Image (cartoon, rainbow, N blue to C red; front, side, top):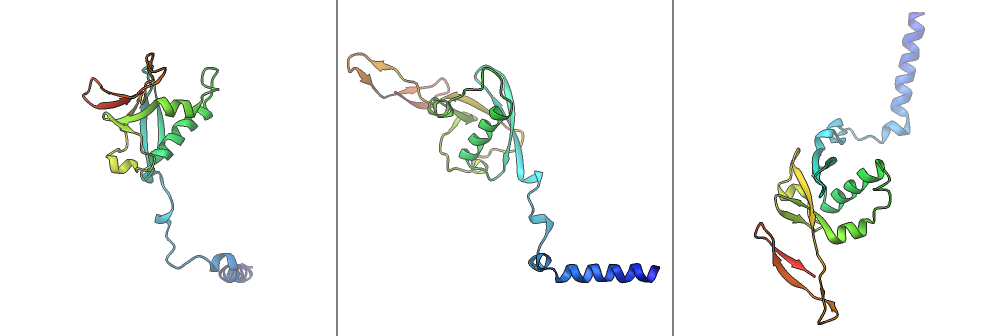
Length: 154
């Protein structure tokens, strides 16, 4: 009986090595190349109402991917107040910030901004619109925030 089992094991292992599925795996294949939780960071995001939530993104994520993950938090845990969020409106008037720096360039990688695991981001006003009654249209002007950063205001 033992001899039959060892023959069956030998047949199975030889058939696996001949299988086209296993022949495609390069000899340099390594599990270290697979994504792991070490490739991701957790960030907390402070909302304007003072509450916060956590989001997990890849260390190499771009601002656009970070924003998508923020949106997904609300899609995955909807409630009555958050079910009809217009994200184009949100991102048009608000942005995320890190240590006072507005995260508005969607192509920038977050790691290039020094954002690391456990850091906190904040929502802040991105543009505010003030109607100029004399011009009957929107006007642009610069305004300095309390932190001294210059902001473009409509």
